[in-house]
Length: 250
Image 1 (cartoon, one colour):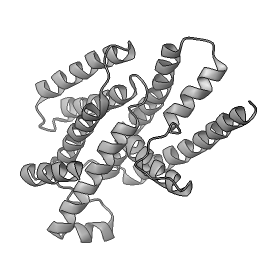
Image 2 (image 1 turned 135 degrees about the vertical axis):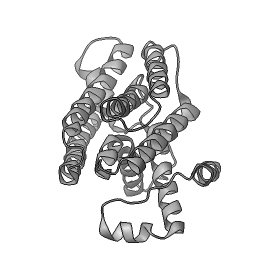
Image 3 (image 1 turned 180 degrees about the horizontal axis):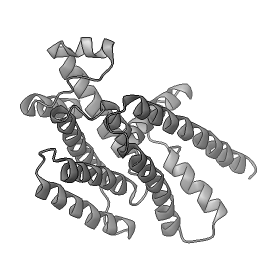
């Protein structure tokens, strides 16, 4: 309820709305101002909670959103999108500094940090598309696919096991990656923690670099989103099976 109230105020006061999606039926609905506000609030809630979900390993949340801010800075520098460059540079440097502290176990973002970071990046990306409609909206979706899909998949997964979606568990993708590496590699827990984060971040770095070459190609961006979801599900179920096969053997 508190989240919902804050996001409503944020959207209404700053007029942060998603005005089009390049999908005919949704765009017709977005012509209605009340639905536009509802849809924008819904998307931001999915994003900020997904951001909190991926904040389960050192460096993962900060590393992922550092990539997103880097992409925004790159586009703003070379394509002149009109966003204040110094603000982006300061934000990126701050995230890198926090990232270094985080991977060394000196700082943790927590709920307030992950919610705030997700909201800031959501705001930047909505405004980026609002003033630069030559970018495919699905490129924005691609940048945020991981935390958003992590949230939606976790809700579906918990419902399928007859659990409340608000109850925490240790079966998120990054936690399964960590468990797998812990069983396969003999190094310290902190190093396994960081390695798990780096693998996920590097994968998304590759995806972002590839997709930057097709900024206005919605078909390519949609395919990339679907490919990422398929890869996520394949990796997830293989790691999930590995974890419970190991546990059942004890």
